[in-house]
Image 1: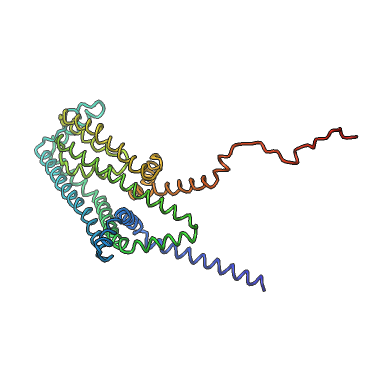
Image 2: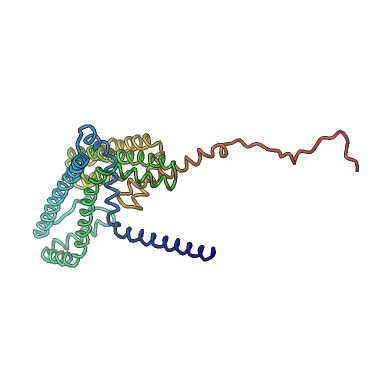
Length: 377
């Protein structure tokens, strides 16, 4: 009887576990598209939650109205620069294409002499330009056929852009509910994890919160400062579309040590166009000012607030970017921060064993009794 009951109990447990696994897989398939937008919304809600509390607790607005104000503000902060950047990029692209087609039609497509004098590819560039300028109509027809044969890639690019905009809209919609119901959601998650891990989860959650806020502020402030300083350099050096370049610099500056690729590329372009003073000046501005800000703000804000070595944060940022995409810039450091917190807790619990001095311990059984007389054989 007991044996039959035990088998039945085991079968029920196995069925329950199987159903839970199937349910988890199905739920993951349903919400897979919304995981990244939800993570972005959670990060934005967390770092700006004090402002929401100001509207809700100080101004005495309702939770829904306060959440609506915050969501609308974040939407404008993201949407306005995005629309301006897309408009400027469109205008620059149309101007570039129109100028390129005009030069091909009149048979005057050329590049700077510094490019044509390069030791390896210089002669090849001259040959290509000669063929293009010799037969402009044939070149335009070849270009037209090439575009028609590669329209599929345009569709792929359109799908990527549409998917990104859909995720952005989903993140902003989720952001509203995180503001309004975030406190209750955090309590539920904290209690669920406490039921599994115990009270130590409070320390882990505090570590996650501190790391997230420090990483977002450190990366965001560094990128903003570098973009503004780079924009000043672009403007005074006479670089084309300084506003667009500033926006691009801000995006690239979110990646550690990525800014030199932007202002360095602009400096090389200025030098190739014969603007030697401007190119060298922008390069010096980038080395002495823009990169110096990166080395100052990011380590102070992140390592100073989290008490975590900056190399851990650096590895977390790059590793998270590789593993999870752009949102990994913030997930990676948080994961390593949790791991470091667990490591420190384990060390503190066993520090008496790990750091105890090495002493020779003699067991009582190893101590020979002392007698006045030798043992009689």
